Image (tube, rainbow, N blue to C red; front, side):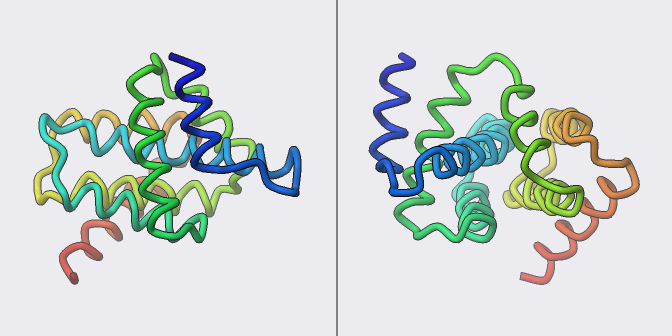
Amino acid sequence: MLQTLKDLFDSVFAPAAGGPGHAEEHTLQLATAVLLVEVMRADVEIDPAERAEVLSALRDKFKLSDDEAARLVELAHQTSLASSDFFQFTSKINEAFDMEDKIRMVEHLWRVAYADGVLTAHENHLMRRVSDLLHVPHGAYISAKMRAKQALRAE
C-alpha cells in the first residue's frame, strides 16, 4: 500500500531539479490536500461543489495547474484512507506555515465544509479538531468561518 502511494506521488510530482526542497514542498502540498479532502469526505456523499472548493484551494495556495491539483486530490484521498490521524499532516503545516497562512487554510477548510450548503456535526467537529492541531486561536477560527460562509453566499 505504501509503495502504491509513493508511486502515485512520484507520478504526480516527478523528481525536479531542486532536490530536497522540492520534496519538502510536495510533502506540504500533500499534507494540505489531505486535510481538505478529509473535510470533503466528512459527508456521506462527496458533493461536486466540495471537490471544486478543494481544487480551488490547492490551485490558490500552491499555484498548481488543474491537472496537478486533480492528481494531488486523488493522492490525498488515497493517503487519507490509509491514515489514522491528522498529526502527521498538521505538524508539516505547522512547520511551514505562519499563522496567517494557517488561518487562510482554515478558511479554505470552511469553504469546503459549506460548499454543499449543509454543515454537518461531523464537519463542525472535524474543523475544530484540525484548527486546534494547527494552533489557530478561537477568534481567528470563528472569523475564518464567517468569511468562508459570507464568500460562498456571495458566489
